[in-house]
Amino acid sequence: MFADRAKIIIKSGKGGDGHVSFRREKYVPNGGPDGGDGGKGGDIIFEVDENVNTLSDYRYRRKFEAQPGQEGSKRNSHGKKGNDLILKVPAGTIIKDVQSGKIIADMSGDNHRQIVLQGGKGGLGNQHYATSKMQAPKYAQPGQEAIELEVQLELKVIADVGLVGFPNAGKSTLLSRVTNAQPKIANYPFTTLQPNLGVVEWDDGTGFVIADIPGLIEGASEGVGLGHEFLRHIERTKVMIHIVDAASMEGRDPVADIYAINRELEAYNASLMQKPQAIAANKMDAVFGEESEIIERLKSEFEPKGVKIYPISAVSGQGVKELLFAVKKMLDETSSEPITYEPEFDPSIRDDKPEAFTVEVDPKDGAYLVEGPKIEKMLGYTNLESERGFLFFQNFLKEQGILKALEEKGIAEGDTVRIYNLEFDYYK
Image (tube, helix red, strand yellow):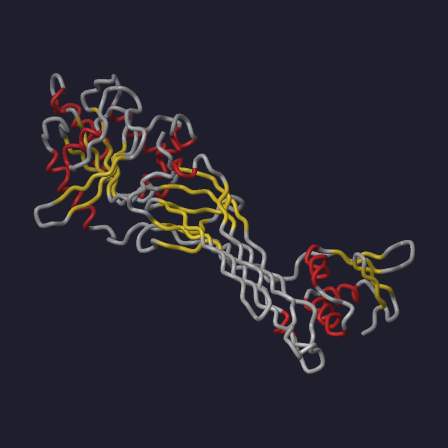
C-alpha cells in the first residue's frame, strides 16, 4: 500500500539544568560560585529528501525524540547541546497538529527544511545569581522543558496537472504515452494504488508535471474504498483532466461518470471545482458505430459549462497532442506559483503565560492553600533557607499572579499560606 499518511509523536530535547558548585582551590577555602549553564535541547527538524516518495518510514514507528541537553558542571563548564533529530519526508508533505487540525508546515516549494519543535533552553548555573549581598547562591535554573506533540503527516503530490476518472478509464495508459513514467497497467479495478508522476516535455525545453491520480469511486469523499487516500493528491494540481471511457467498455455511461467524479471532488473540497478542467473522451479507437454521437452528447452536456471535450485514444495516440496543447494553454493562463499551504500553528512558540494553579482556603484552620505543577517544581530546586532564595521564590509568586490571586481571595497580613510542604505568614 502506498503510504501517504502517518500519525506520529515528536518530542524536542529538554534543556540541561544549570549546575550548583563552588570553586575549591588550594589556599581559597571559600571560592565563589562556578556552576555552568545547561546545554540546549535538540530540535525536531523536518527535511525534504528528493530520494523519498512515501511516508512508509513512519508507518511502523510512532515516537521520535531529540536528545536532551546535558547539565552544566563545575568550573563554569557548559553542558553539551543535545543532538537535533532530522526527519526526512518527501516533497509535498504537510505537517498538521492532530489536536487542532491546523497546518504547522508545508514541505514544498522553497521550504526544504524547517524546525518544527525547538529544544528547551539550558538553565543558568549558580554563577549567574551571585551578587554583592549573596555571594554564594545555592540554587541554579532548571532547563526548559521539552515540547511533545502528536502530528499528522499527509503527502499531497506536487503536480501541475491531475488525471482523474474511474478505474480503467485509461489514465495510466495516457500518462505512459505522454511522459517517461512507467505506471503499472492492467484491466482490473484499482490497478494504480499510488499516484504516478511524469513530465511532459516540449521542444523548447519547457514542460509540466502530470499525475495519474488513482481511480475514484462513488462515495470516495466519504472515505469509501481508498477515496481519501487519493483525493488529497488533487488539491495541489492546477488543471484537471477527466479521462472517460467513451467506448463504454466497462458498461459505464461517460456523462454519468463525469458528474459522479465531480460530485466526489466537490464533496471533498468545493474549491477543486474552481480549477480549469478538460474532458478526454478516451478509447475512441474502440468505439463501435457512430463515434460522433457520444462526442456530441458530451459536448452538448459540458461545453456550455466551459469544459472542452477532446476525443483521444491513449493507445494509438489519436488526439493526444491536441489535448496536451490545450492543457498547456490552460496552465499558461493560471498562476505559475506553486500551490502551497500557509502555516496556521507554531508549536515552538512556548506559552509564557502563568501556568494553572489553585488557591483555596482550608476550612480547618483558614490557611490559604496554593498548588500548581510549576510551583511544585520551583520548590524542588530553590534554596528557601537563604534570604536570596526566598526573595527569588517570592518574585516567582508575583510573576505567576499567585500573590494577586491570594489578595482576590481576601488574604490579610499575618494569614498563613501553605504551599505543599512550605508554610509562611503573608506580609506585603
